[in-house]
Each structure stands twice: as structure tokens, then as C-alpha cells.
Image 1 (cartoon, rainbow, N blue to C red):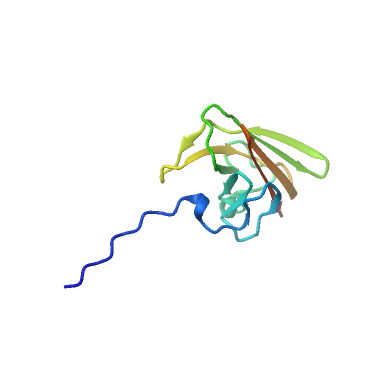
Image 2: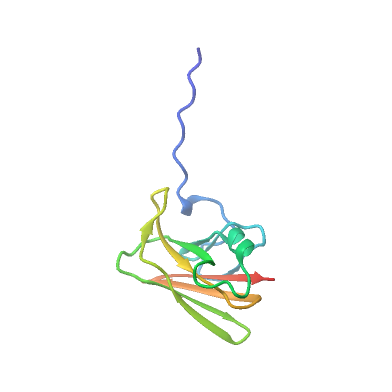
Length: 135
């Protein structure tokens, strides 16, 4: 009886092939992308965010998570969102781990209006920038 191959461990998020860029530059979030990388962060779930989003979203919805390339335990995450001259600033929850054991920041980002939003995430020396269009 042939032996079955051993299950391979999951690929760490920062070694996966994802839309976006490892460079510190703003990246467009494609409409079908769940996860996108910009600089020092992978962010998502953009598919679910777009599915739930509406202008009166409120603080209990509009969840995005942020996976830092180099987690810094005492570094708080701030996300600055700008669109059409409007700026909103959000603070994320504490650094925690997801089900796969990866360090992450959960956040509530209830963007208040349709349009293209530039989301700039910063934690310690980590930086990422995501351009998210909401219809």
C-alpha cells in the first residue's frame, strides 16, 4: 500500500502570492481580492467588507484585519482614511493572533460614504496604503 504524502504546513501570509506590492506604495484593492499586500501589511477581508458595506454601517460592522510583516508588541495601529477631501482616523484593537497563529490587528473601519478611500495603516515603523473603492 503506497504511503500518503505528509500534509504540508500552511504557507505564512507574507510568503503567499497576493495582489499588491511588497514596496511601500499605495495599491489598488481589486474588486475580487480578499487579501491585498502593501508595504509592511496584508489587509483583508475586502470581499466581505464590500459585501457588508453601506453608508450607515456603524461601528459594529466594517471589519478589516491587518497582518504586520514585523509585529511590534507595543505598537498601536492607526488607519487614516481619506476620500474627496474628507479624513477619518481609526484606531485598531490590540495586536492579537488569528486562528493560524499569525499576529494581526482587528479593526472596525465604518467608512461613511461611497467613493475611493485611501487607507494608510501605520504601526510602529510598519506602513501600508490601500485604495479601496466602494459603490
